[in-house]
Length: 123
Image (cartoon, rainbow, N blue to C red; front, side, top):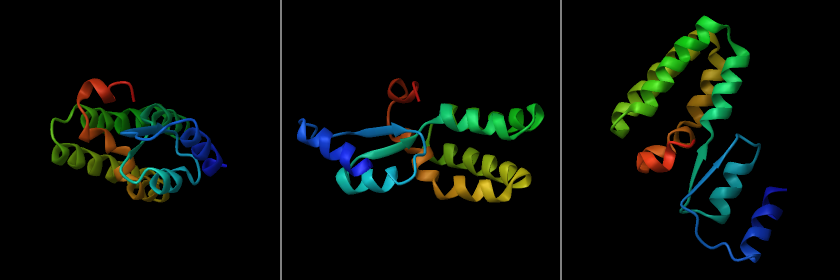
């Protein structure tokens, strides 16, 4: 399905994309890499936070969200990665398998760091 979507966009003139922002749809990351190998694929933080809010109680979600806020407010990639690691550790205490899923997609959740804040503030 995603291949058809991207073929259609290309046939209508799409040539270059700096960053794709999407929910974590099955297979989309691979198709982005295939059709636009120089583009970044940012997974949507709004969807991520909504999913976390549904899975955890208020106290647990609040703790996880604190680390995510630190990530978004980071001034450097290293600082953001440190806060992301703290988030993953807390998440692992609550749900180890979910933490591993997020860890595998670290590059996609932190792609925004390569861009100025005015670009990623909407993610």
